[in-house]
Length: 102
Image (cartoon, rainbow, N blue to C red; front, side):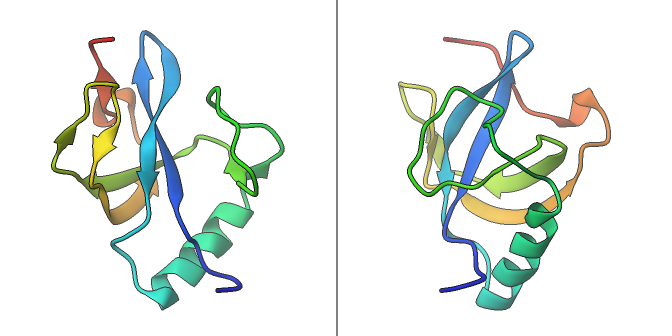
C-alpha cells in the first residue's frame, strides 16, 4: 500500500560492523506502518549501512533501534520469524544486540 512499510531490513553489530540479520514484515498495523515510514523518511540515505543490495529498498541512517521478537537464529545468522515490537533512538551501545559468532 502506498505510504506504508512492507518490510524492515534489520542489522546487528558484529566486531564493530553492522551486518544484515534479516527482514521483518509483521508486527504493525497499517496506521503504525504509515507513521514508521514518515519517521524513516527523515533519515533516508542513498547507500545502505550494511553490504546489501535489494531492489526497491529504501535505506536509512542507522540511528534507530528496532525492537523485535523472534523464534531463533538460523545457521546463517538471520532472525527466524521476527515480529516488530517498536522503535527507539539508539541510546547507548549496551542496548544494541551484538553478534558474537560467525
